[in-house]
Picture 1 (cartoon, one colour):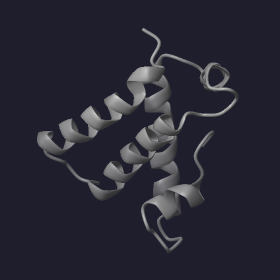
Picture 2 (tube, one colour):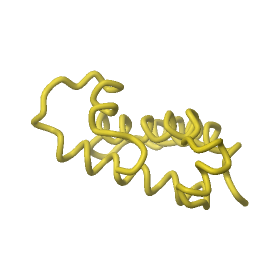
Picture 3 (cartoon, one colour):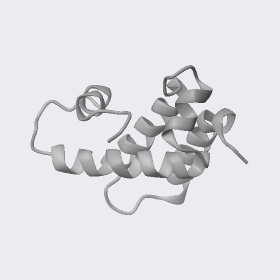
Length: 98
């Protein structure tokens, strides 16, 4: 992962054990890839646009994707997916390059 850490994911999701670290690491990497693709930016470009840091809204959106993937490991309903994606989209929109 490039801008969130495994420890931050575990703290955010209130996960205390280490037994699911590989799954969380996979979810974190996938979420970062998804977010950067949605933004249509590189990480360096994003940081440059925000004074050298990843915007808090981008971090929050990434964590929401990770947590949704963790909580709904099987097939989730369209309603759940739409609610998460709507919230993520709102967080990412200010940073998207169209």
